[in-house]
Every structure is written in structure tokens, then in C-alpha cells.
Length: 113
Length: 114
Image (cartoon, rainbow over all chains, first blue to last red; front, side):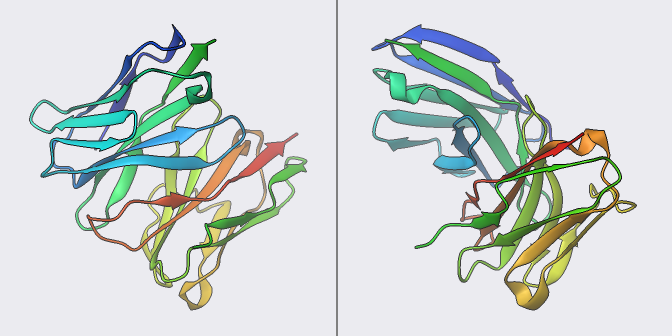
């Protein structure tokens, strides 16, 4: 059974700082790994999807890496802004042909102006 | 393209009452998922549909929860009777299906059972 862990549970940084969010998963037989953003009271917004054959994906100030062999992914946010404040969730896609997502509990990020 | 639509946005009911949630996925998305997100937790899969067939409902509490996806498009999730521990956000997501495609989530329905 896939288990996903995110560290830290919460993070507070001053505006402009670069930061890294960590995600680990127990079963390396994943199809892909996705990072989502969740604002309070809202649904999930997809940020980045990394296929199992890829090492990283970039979108604007966001960069996600994947190391399947060690069961780890990181989300790097450059030059953080107050608007980046949200909960960030990682999810691993696995399950024989069913491509189900298993989520971590998330990291709550606060960027202080 | 239009996103995943869910309704209602909020619902408050008393325990032992019944409630239903509705989801309209993105047009053409064959795969539909219902997730339950308890406060402070990551979403947990309840049921997965492929077109109008169930792929996985192993984590659905079938004594009180039911779901259907008629004609392979819209889906409803029902709870009857509700318990206090069912208080959560219920998220619907859809996907084209397959390893190369991500999920699109709706805004969710926040259920409070009192």
C-alpha cells in the first residue's frame, strides 16, 4: 500500500526567500507524481506533473524533481511571494492500471510580507 | 474548457439524515473520482469510475455511502445515514485516464454533520 509523507507540516518564510518542500513515498512503482496547491476552503489546483521517466518539471518559479529510486520528490519555489501562501500537497499515482492518487497531508506555507 | 462542477458548495445536516452531492466532470473525461478530505488530512479516495463502471470502491463505507455515474457523465455521491465523522470536504476529480494525464479537481462540497 502506497504511503506519502510530507515534511514539514508547516513552514513560514519571509517574502523573497527560496524554499523547498519535501515529499516521500514508500512504493517506487509510480506512474507519475503530482503537486497541487490548495487555498483555504477551495479545491485542488494542479501545479506540476512529473512522469515516472522524468527527473524534473518546471513552471515559472516552481520546479519539481523526482527521484524514484529513493522515493522522494521536492518542490522548489523561487523568490516566494505572499500570494504563494497555501497548502501544498503531493500525490503519487499508482495501482495496477487504475492510476489512483495517494496524497500526503500537505505542507502549509505562509509567506510573510 | 469548463472545469469540474460540484454542488452544493456547503451543506449542514444533522446526524442520521441523508445527503447527496453532485459532480459534472470535464467533457470527454472518462475517469471520475470521489475523494474525502478530513480537516488537516490529505484527500482519501472513496470511489473511482471508468465511464459508468466502478473501477475501485474498496474504501467506500458501503453500509452508508453509495455512488453512481449514469451514462458515464455526471455522478452523485450519497450518504445515508450520516455520522459526525463524515464531516469533511468531498472532492470530485476527473481525468482522461492513463498514466500520462493529471487530475482536475472541483471546488468540493464542505459537509458538516451536527
